[in-house]
Length: 217
Image (cartoon, rainbow, N blue to C red; front, side, top):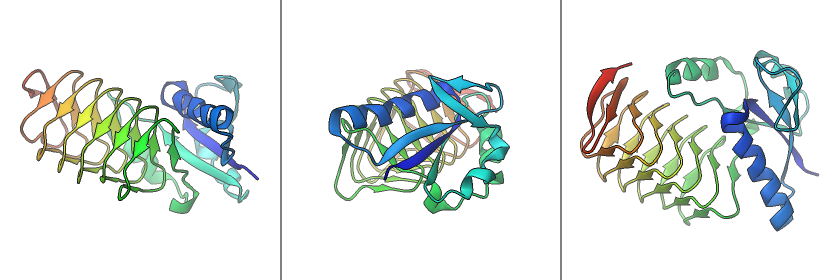
């Protein structure tokens, strides 16, 4: 029997996750999960053709069903701190967060994917450690011995070099590159296309080539 996946969030990040589940099912007969629906505070009827099951704070009523699993899909570049605070209010056991991997992604043996991690199409994860709730979008490369998260967001096409550290709720934007041995600290944001060659302090925004300080959050 398939597990029922509840996506907390909207179509921006949740839509690709739902598409991943459908792709795995159609192309690989992978029935581990079925998209049960969304929890969302804005939409009330459906998102991407899936039902909205209620408001975000109504998740507890779904915990009574042992077949329901959750994924957190609220990663906001302008409000990553607020999203993190929301996540901390949840009383969802770790083992009720789903770990989702697109069948076209490559996950190295020895990689650690904690509960709530999502890895989307054509991403490559070496023997890295992806912590709770981290979202890896399509085409991302994560180098060996990198530690990412929890709740980090790696946007489409970004590259995280070997032995890097990406902190809690850090946001790595489209096509950005984090050169090996560097750290992006908690709640930091790396702008699209940036190349990070030094540490990025907590709650700051860095951008450019090479990446430089832009502002504090």
